[in-house]
Length: 345
Image (tube, rainbow, N blue to C red; front, side):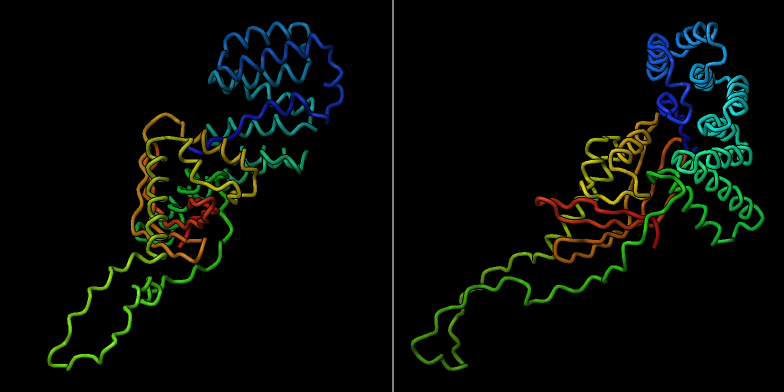
């Protein structure tokens, strides 16, 4: 299932609730300790500490918010919903409680409630990127349900099958689920390698005497074997790059997988490279094996750029999809690296 973000770090430094910034240093230290315990997965200890904190400051927004986070992680959604709901009533200007209500509703497959909560988060804070991203995930999930219903009614609906496969692939492989990459432009079809492109053997020195009659031809020296053309070499290099990329993904080697992407890689939704890397690492490191294979690979090389089109098969413990994929590659310091990727024909 698409993972929705539980964002609590931003609340701790939010400027929209000025009163929160005036807390004594001792309270700030306590909240930081609780946040550290949450990040380390020490939820029971964090719950004990936040309850002590709230015993002295029962109305404190930060403490209440952190308690909602802890209860969510401890799989106590009803209690967490109660806390976040009260926070939206007491602090309607804060978007985070709405966002985290949506997270819980989404986990319970109450997507309409999740959508409404995210719309409220965006209404209170239009530039809250996390809520926008999660709303996109919700729309993708709702669309997936509709396409699935269409297939239940008419299993031969090829259009619904393609759309459902596309959404499933985006939600499993894209840095930002529910958003597709921009087109990279129409790639030129591969041209056959012309003989003139191959390096020519050195010409023999002209004979001093007239050529022998045709009936007694002089034996000609065997020409040196032409080497492979640059285009063929580049195609093989790109193919090896893609094979290595898929293999690293399959064995969950995050370092090797991310190294296949250029520093100037164009992320799917314009997020920073650091954000995209972190999201990909999070997805790849989920429990369970991953199998990624490439089929019907077609490579077009044009100087130091290349386009690779293929059928990608992805399989994990929870998802199995097949989709068409396009990678745009460029040569950087002698290596072919991925500049952009998108799902489509």
